[in-house]
Amino acid sequence: MEGLKLRFPEHHHPEMPLGPGVHGIGRIGDTVGLVGTGEGDAPAIRLYVDRRGVWMTVADGARGIHVNGRPVQRMAMLRLGDAIYLDGVEMVLASMRRVEPLPDALRHVPGEFRGDCRVVVRGVGGRHHGRSFTLEAPRLVGRSDEADIRIDDPDFAERHARIEMIGNRIVLRDLGSGDGSLVNGEAVRDAVLAPGDQIVFDLHHRFVIEAPSVATPQPPKPAEDPDGIELPLAPARRRGHRLPWLLLAALMLAGAISALLLLGGD
Image (cartoon, rainbow, N blue to C red; front, side):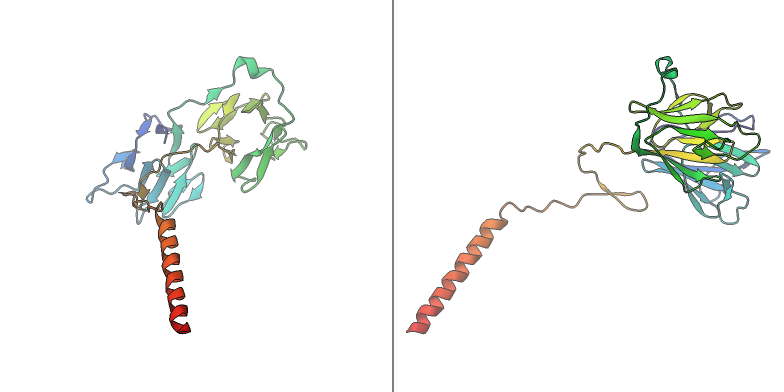
């Protein structure tokens, strides 16, 4: 899992790095911050960070916990760009890696109308939640009737942005919007996107980029139980001598049948 942090867009609070492990977060004075996770501590939420992703659990009795405006009572899986609300404080899960800006060489190159239908912009929040838009062609985002991803808000630009492909690169291109867009919690205008990136338009319309990845052969890894404890791999069965034993058994059985036939003939 790449380096992560919590950003506090509306509060004067330093960014909070999130390394692998468990992080307890709760009220500290008039803000929130890291608190202990021991038996005597009482964090409102816990964030679990490992190679599988980021999970959040809510403490018993904690109220008013939201992710992207939706209440969470027990557990939630988090993505880059998700906004967590705790006691009136907003925290955004962000990456230590900055969003890649659009190179100047591609800034004025028109998008290719033949993209890749396997690359998908999937709605995960707002009006288009659950809908998917493939990128075999550029997708216009805006308020106009011709927009592919239409956001019907009088304050939203008619032509806000376009998501398209240039070669094998996924590009977000601003079309003169007022406030730009958010990618993984970072304010941007033009950017190169990667699978897993979350784009937010107009604060609450959320989309995730999904694309196939090329699988490469990997050495076997230790098995892992639900509690994150690595278990040793079971030894591989040796199958190299199985066939000779079968042949030997077949020959012995044939010999026994022949002997019975000879004895029966006598």
